[in-house]
Each structure stands twice: as C-alpha cells, then as structure tokens.
Amino acid sequence: MAASDGQKAIEDFASLDLKTTALLLDVDGTLIDLGPSPFEVHVPDALCHSLDVLLDRTGGAIALVTGRPIRDIDKLFSPLKLPTVGGHGAELRLPGGKVTLAVEPLPETLRRELTQAATPGSGVLVEDKGYSVALHYRQAPDQEPRLHALVTSVRDRFTGEALEVLRGKAMFEVKRSGISKGDAVRHLMQRQPFAGRMPVFIGDDATDETVFAAMPALAGKGYSVGRKFARLAGIFATPEQVRDALSRLSR
Image (cartoon, rainbow, N blue to C red; front, side):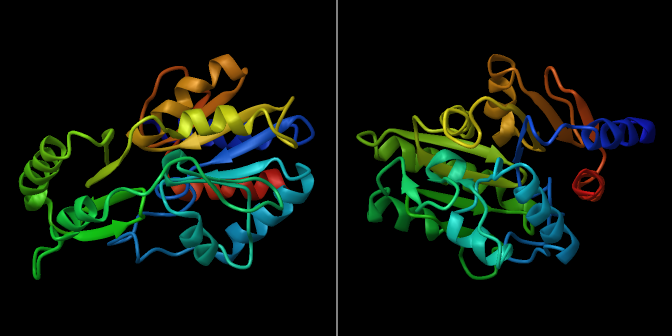
C-alpha cells in the first residue's frame, strides 16, 4: 500500500460530519497496536481523550466493535465506558445501559478441552470468554497445526452444539454460531443515538468482514487498516494513522 493511500484515508476520515455520522471502531490492530499477546497491549492516553471528545460531539453515537469481552474493554479504556459490541456480537452495551448477552455460555466441558491447549511452554494463550474460547498462538506459530487439529476434534465430538470457528491474526476462536459483528452492528444502527446516522466502520481483520459486508445496505462507509476488503472508502497503513485521524476529527 502506498504511503499516500494512508494519508488520503486520514484526510477523508477527518472530514466526516459528526452531526450525521456514527463511528464504529474495532480495537486490536485498529485503534491499538497488536502486542506480544492480547494481555500485553497499550492504550495511549491521547486515544482515550479523542474518543471521549468524539463521544460528546457525536451525541453518543460512537461504539467499539471488538472480539474482546466488554469487561476487558472497560479495563483497557478506563475510565471510559463506551457503547460496545463485545465478543464478536455476543455482547452489546448501548449508551448508559447494561451489558446484554445474545447467546448462552458454551458447555464447561467443551471449554475445558480447549483451554487445555495452553500446555506449559507451548506459547499458546487462552481467552475463555464463556460464550467463546480463543486460542492465541502469536508467540508460537509452530502450534497452528496442533491447535487446528484440536479445534476440529472438539467440533466433531460436540455435534449437539452449534459452533463456529473464527480465524483471526494467529488465533482460532470457537464460538456460538448465529452471531457476528455485522449482525450486532445492524441491531445497533436501529437504536438511538445511532439510528438515522451514516455508520463509518474501521477494522483490520477477517473477523471484521461481516461489518464491512453490512455497510452498503446501511449506506455506510468502511475503512481498513493494512489490508484490502471489498468496497472500502480508504485504507490506513497503521493503527497510529487511525489514532491520528481520530485526533484530527475530534478537534
């Protein structure tokens, strides 16, 4: 991607009309840089300031759209508590509201089999979210075949459960089927203060594809970070450029 493409995305994004726009923002790899593990990331103070200002200037029409549980998002962005789609659509929090769940937790026996993938010295890290289990092998790429075999085996043995496997950046996530970020965003855009606004989404990964796919029917715009998706309005080179664009938009 040419450096000028990222600069063009910054300028285009920073010209949005906050009175008519709803901002929808992925977190990892979009707002913040990927760390050695999901538990070793940094949220800059300047980013939190930009989001706080934009929350006010959009009348609350800004939401994080993430695979992380909302409880973890609140810790990362404390003291902010933004409207949030969590767990790839399994959780939703509207402005000023409580967290609602769209699915039931996975069986404990299923989750236990997956979490045992993090054997000592393997470099595999596990996120047990209840309604899903994510296996991260960012620090151990050689573990991908073993984890793929484990996930396939668990799906084959728990045939009574409606399961789906998401593949992200060095990650497998086993979750309830029938939920997605895209479906959650469609629901969110029917609720105030998002309804009637143009949704603008920024994402970076295959787990964001359902949101990009939802944008045309919602008369929205999609921006990505570092990779191409269909029908994008622009591509940022890095999360740093996204943070720059948000800072400019908040001024």
